[in-house]
Image 1 (cartoon, helix red, strand yellow):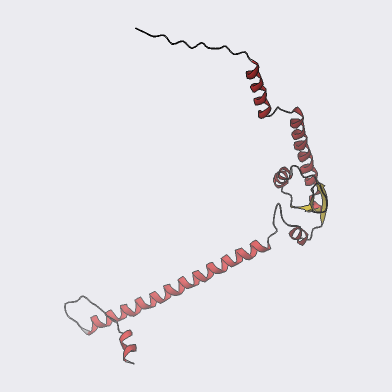
Image 2: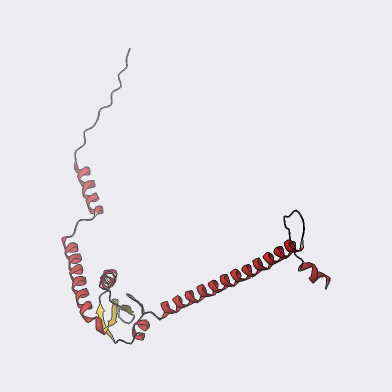
Amino acid sequence: MQEEVESKSVNLAVRTTTVTARVLYQALRSYVQDTKNMAQSYRARQQTKQQMKLTKQQIKAAGKNAPKRGMQTVKQLVGQGQGVEKMEIGDSGIRDFKRIANKYGVDFAIVKDKNSDPPVYNCFFKARDVDAISSVLKEYSAKQMKKKERSEVEKPSILEKLKQFKEIVKNTPRKDKEKRKEQER
């Protein structure tokens, strides 16, 4: 009991020339008013913290429920309930296909076919994105054709050039340098 009284004691300091009942009353009144204000501000801070928690939770929930864009898993794609179509893509240039599809804003999923010996990739996309996929395929095929044309030109490798230069250096006649030591007097 004594400890409770001690923990609840309050120090009150007032500047005055004489201590009267009125001065003491005003000091106690201002103290009570300050404690009420502090309690209100504490409650307001707690409410804002709770509101911030709620808004963060609402943002997370909205983010989970929002449809994903671009590359995703087949499960996510089918889960959107808009129908799915499939097409095969060769193993070369998958990265190019992803870039172009993201550029056109197409939702797609790429899955590797494990049963085929040369790797074959299946691209699943939404049925409503057929027009966008056709333009993606046009751009993708044009890019693949450019790559094939570049490879057909066949630039000689640096190692082959180096071997050629070594042969040229080997076949050039060398001039023997005569070493003479002259004594100076």
